[in-house]
Length: 63
Image: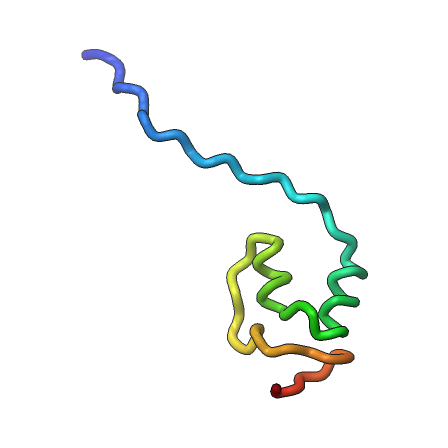
């Protein structure tokens, strides 16, 4: 019995992100520049239903 061969595929390196202030996220969402799913994607979370709509001042405005 021997040892298993070493894997030949290397895992990709995850780029480091500068931490963003939660208030900046909230401000960009209120201005309609980010959606909920974009913020969730930044943090590595899955998207949610209805999270791609643009919010202005915390309200859903259909464009």
